[in-house]
Image (cartoon, rainbow, N blue to C red; front, side, top):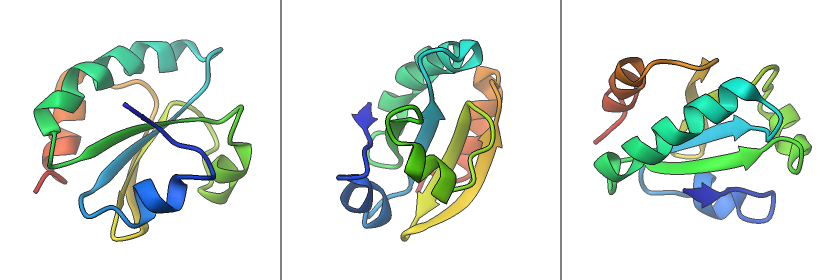
Length: 105
């Protein structure tokens, strides 16, 4: 999965030609460690339809604040430079698939 920083956020997320899922997470977050492997598993299924990316809030706090991330994990879908929808908290695989399917082109 793509690592997002303030240096590549615009190029990789805001100007992407396909929707981008940004996983806002942190090393110390237990639920984040549950979601991470699920996202790694699902990402190849959506290749070319949704770009999967991770943003560590401890390293990129400014971006987390800018996007009003109050708790983690927060998974946010961006399309055409704007955040569309977000999921907060760990979710089961089936729920994640439904969420991703609604944005996959």
